[in-house]
Image 1 (cartoon, protein in one colour):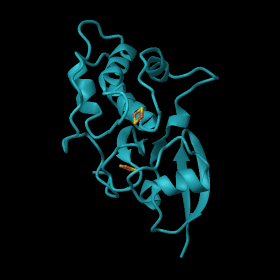
Image 2 (cartoon, rainbow, N blue to C red; image 1 turned 90 degrees about the horizontal axis):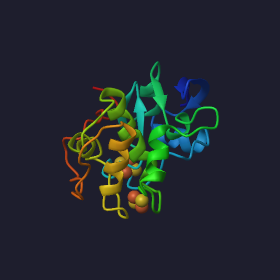
Image 3 (spheres, protein in one colour; image 1 turned 45 degrees about the vertical axis):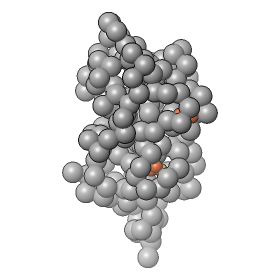
Length: 178
Ligand code: FES
Ligand code: FES
C-alpha cells in the first residue's frame, strides 16, 4: 500500500505517494524525473546512483525512499546555481574527467561530499572518496585531478594511479542511514 511521503530534494519539498518497497533511485528517476542520478548495477556495486543524504554519500539504489523522510537529499541537479555550474562540475569539464558520462553524476556527488568536509583535499583523499565509484572510461586520473583542482589544493595531483574500488568507501549503509 502506498504511503504519503514528503521528500526534501535539492531544497524543495515534494509530496508523494510511494510504495514502501521503492528505492530512492526509483522515486528520483521515475516519479520526479530527476534522471541525472544514474541507474546501472542496482546492486550497490558501481556508485553511479550516488546522491547525498544529509550531506553524506548514499547509494540510492539501496536506500528505500521512505527512509529519507525528514532528511535532506541532494542530487546532481541540485549543484548548479543561477545557471552556473558548481565548481566541481566545471572542474570535471576542464580536466577531461567526463567521457561517456555515465559515472559522472555519482563521481561528482562523492567528490562534493569530500569537498564539503575537506575544502582542499589531497589526491589520496579524492581517491578514497571515489573508492566506491566505478568508471570504465577515464582511468580515474582525470577524475581525481578534477576533485583536487576544484578544492584549489596545490602540489602533485593524481599521479595516474587508479582508484581501487574498496569496501571502505564512506557510504551510508542502506536504509538505516548509519
Ligand atoms: S546503480 Fe550501481 S550502486 Fe546503485
Ligand atoms: S566516463 Fe564513462 S564510465 Fe566514467
